[in-house]
Image 1 (cartoon, chains in turn green, blue):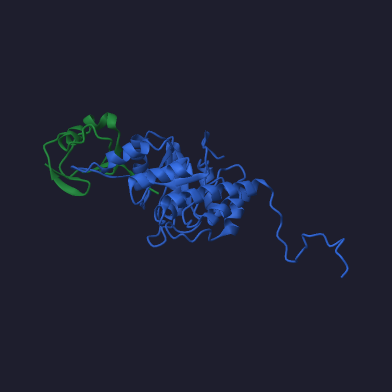
Image 2 (cartoon, chains in turn blue, brown):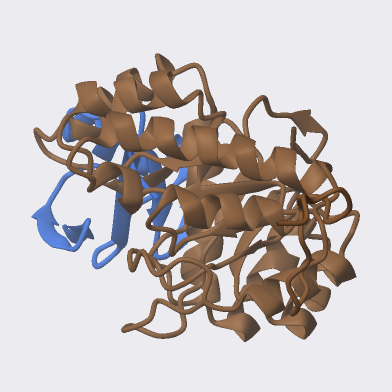
Amino acid sequence: MKIIVNGAPLETDASDLAALLLELGKGDAKVATSLNEVFVPKTIRADQALSDGDRVEIVAPRQGG
Amino acid sequence: MPVFYGEHIESRLMLGTAQYPSPAILAEAFRQSGAGIATVSVRREAGQDTAGQDFWALVRELDVVLLPNTAHCHSVREAVTTAQMARELFDTNWIKLEVIGHADTLQPDPFGLVEAAAQLVEDGFDVFPYCTEDLVLCERLVEVGCRVLMPWGAPIGTGLGLNNPYGLRSLRAHFPEIPLVVDAGLGLPSQAAHAMELGYDAVLLNTAVAKAGDPVAMAKGFARAVEAGALAAEADPMDPRDMAAPSTPVFGKAFL
């Protein structure tokens, strides 16, 4: 299926958000996620099924003012 | 020293972490200034990019309290979702809430700001709203549960200082019990001292230090300025007057 990750299209077989992070090499990384503009806590990523066209955001700590 | 949401902070200087020439200079600026709070953000990270992980390792070494922001969010939904992601990432209920209403001035959207603040307070956040010095806006923010107010001195990154000292002074008089922070627009330590002389609890700045030729020296300058300004505010300054008044006694002057 094709989804959008951080604004870029991605072809993936990951069935849920936790699997997607593993696929992207971010399984253990300090990141936070949202699905279709709604925050998804780390604890329920594995319960969050992905569907074609979903929009995923993966963010990490960064410099800020 | 300021107390924000029950937490005592050992410095009146709050520093941003962006735009420094290097991570080492950032760390040294914090060390030399003794800044008590560092603002941070959340940004996209995917693929092989590990900048966020590296930055996380750096800020953990700073030994400061972290205040994540919702910088560049233009809608309530964006700001709320960003705040929720930041809470999980940084393990804090503190959020510097930015809801930007104007692209050129980066002026806060007062309507969206109140709406987002209300939602976040309801969700258990301790909200630090980046606002203007508008008295009515600040009343609304306090009504929805904000226990800190952070009015701008001038638009972000301008270095113009305190554009409206009257408005900032009014805010101080109107909210004697609410911690007030001048956030944004400061360019020089003298402007930070002025904010403290108005009775503010702290200042938050980033560009003035990070973009100085010597960020470490400038951070130290700001640290000394906020200390000087706070001492002056506590010392009950004299009232200004229009007419001159001699300081040296007139009585006893030799008749020549």
